[in-house]
Image (cartoon, rainbow, N blue to C red; front, side, top):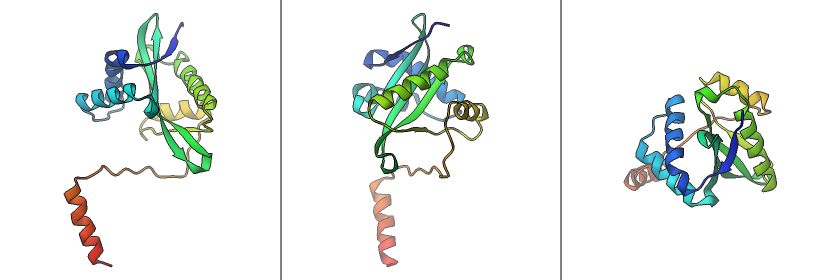
Length: 165
């Protein structure tokens, strides 16, 4: 199958948004279209934040990859974070995802990044198998997130914490 990989820019917003929405639906990630569109726009206009590739079959979008950047001391500086890798269902199991990983690995190597990581839902067992076969290994770490709260909530908690000292 003939598949091309190309870097994305603002002109690709519409095609990418359709794929990003499909990815979020597939992974059962609750996200609002407006938030996805805003985030996509910010990323496509600010290449220092990350890179997106569009995968096309005869100029028809069939998938995408999103790599952002992180700073990790244990790897000597910048590392890639593969946020999304999505291939439409009818194009899966044809080597497209594997080729995308090689493209991303080359990109990271060319920029001096010694690693790239990813996160995936625990329920997506087929993705875990795919990534292990590609050479990824699980780290003995727990992923946690704190959604930034309104300032007044943080101030109240900070005041309460200060009283305990």
